[in-house]
Length: 313
Image 1 (spheres, rainbow, N blue to C red):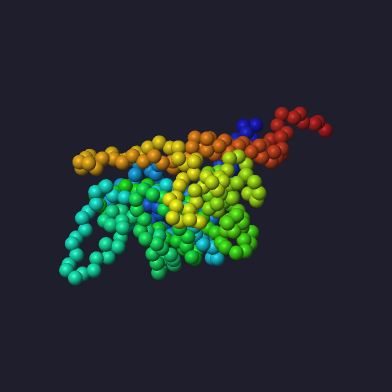
Image 2 (cartoon, rainbow, N blue to C red):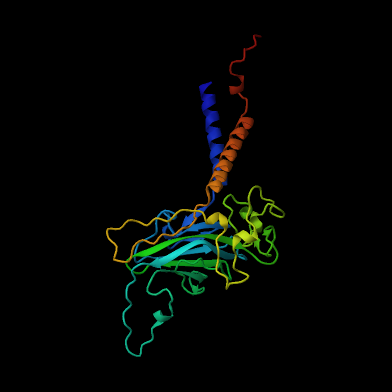
């Protein structure tokens, strides 16, 4: 009987683990994937693994990551949930020689840290927009092809970096099996009604509780998303679900220059408590379903006949 119970437990554990794996949201950390390429339907990208707890403070970082759309005909859309890239103590740029051009003067982020987007392919990158820095959430970035590159550069003695963004593979025109958003974009069906409420469409339609998404529970609506694509002159806003977190902590340092104390930022990067509870409950429900399926699929075989009296011929 004991070997049968052991086999049953092994099957149940495997099914439960599979259910939890399906429900997990894929994430990636930019500084851990330097020099690599990621490809897929969608991704929740953080600046670093300690995001939401500590700033990334490593000086002289030059990290580049490329993301590739799920299909050759798709494009990439990157939307920030939270953005903070700057330097407390910048290095003074060297004085240019007389009659020499100074390209740094056109860099609004000089001489501090910045994030730069690029068009592909990786072998021939082209800058996509100006370098990004500061505390304001930038407008969404969209590639014209299947590649989008990100390059993080930290300059100065006290860089401060922490951002969170959503990467979405999408297409225009015929959806061909993709989910059609209200704004006529098409996204992979795997991104519809995800556990963390990622606004992959850009208008909230992939998380709506009414057709065509028909998501269960609370959902994003256009008024909550705070999209600025229709009017870039408006400052981007974060949805109400992302505005309820505590202050972001700073990695402790041995000393700080006078007047350069830590800067507190109120930002929600993990989502509100109810969202975390919903995700946990959903994962437990899927795990329980895996256990139930394991019980139903368990063949009787010899284990099912344990304890039954044998017939005497």
